[in-house]
Image (cartoon, rainbow, N blue to C red; front, side, top):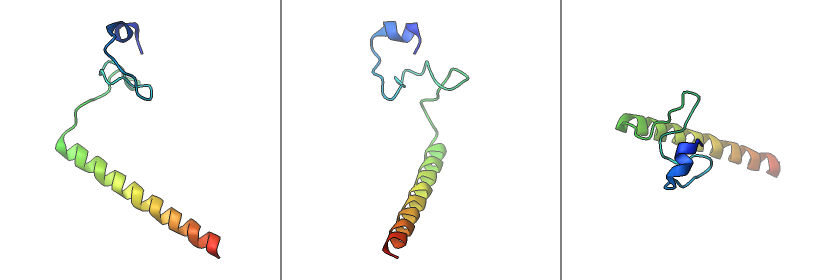
Length: 66
């Protein structure tokens, strides 16, 4: 976090990111707003990750019961 952000006093940090938009990846900018299509795609990816996680948990349960 840079000095300008710290001096502002209005930021609340959460896991190293305050949400002010001044900080971010290696380019120095993190987007805060996304299109509806981007949000839908992100949710679809998250759902797929959850399905994969559930599959792995079920495999582990079956392995432990064998």
